[in-house]
Length: 254
Ligand SMILES: [Zn+2]
Ligand SMILES: [Zn+2]
Image (cartoon, rainbow, N blue to C red; front, side, top):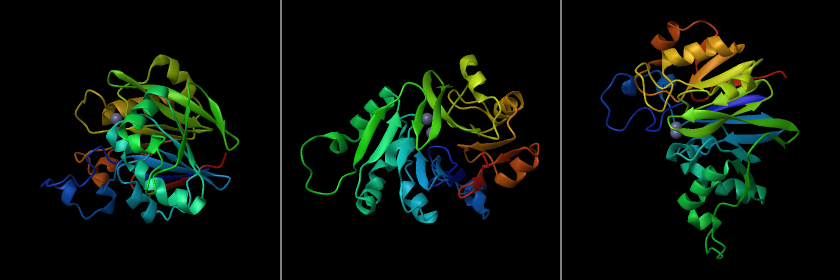
């Protein structure tokens, strides 16, 4: 399985509009972070986790030629607003794209994009999707997809485990019942918003502690805000914990 980080930024994206800070003005391209999303590829299938606000720019940058399924973590704006950008994929593929998410996530998406789900025939091209509500593990293109419940502040949302890879964006804590789902990972991706505590996101220190506890082969941090400069933050981390950046690709053997 190939993993491509499409976006590694928090909801505002980095640079933040009108922000005078050093990270937002950095010439290190790893400090340019679009909204959080990853592309997983196996058996020539492309699977998106979330449709970020920046999906169009991400798809052009990474030369994504087709999307075969979408897995949603939750319905916050930064994770869903790119849904309209799947229209060219529908056009080239001549098919609807299956999307998976918890019932409450899909019902928020239906309310955010009523024109996609209304039955009246549209006069212009609209996204074509088939929505599938999930409440547990399921199979997708011969792989087991395991939703992993996590707490995003007061809200329970999901991350995903696929084989020996897990992607947990937007969490403040991992409930005990989900810790057991995260054993024996080669690669773990964790939310690490900033150094200071935040009510709905894990801090850098808390995410380092989660990595130590879950003991994956490698950990990558994502959903980072402009408090974290790539180079200086990464230098202070243990070698098995790295900051992800837009465009980073990882190959998983299993
Ligand atoms: Zn987010
Ligand atoms: Zn969120």
